[in-house]
Length: 184
Image (cartoon, rainbow, N blue to C red; front, side):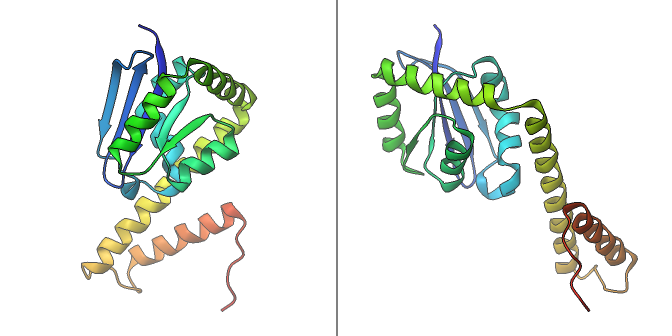
């Protein structure tokens, strides 16, 4: 059976995705604890690639049904990817959108061509820049979460070498991003 669409249910605490045939058969699925709440905003594309990249790489022309959160709507708008949206957290809405898509082969074909064109239009330098940006964002969030955990535990003092190291790291981030240092 050949695949017809990818359905993504990315909630605040869980990620679920389904690789589906035209008759509704689930050909493959992915479930993960990588909910939106545990992934930094800049790391969404890399997380999506890590979880369902094998589907996207092998079938660039498949339409996607995703929860109607702002990030997915922005991704569809800015990247030109064909997506149908369902009400976040509403399984009935997801099923309804999947049935509408699966019962409309012409619309699936149009969506497939749109997604294919978006994939072809993306240059390799753009892809590399996006991965680097996403990696840096993830690294920064992890570093700041560690510092916050240490501060809450009372193990982070201004005079401490760790505080100085973190300050230097933040300064490097500002330099890399071209952010001017605030005046003292």
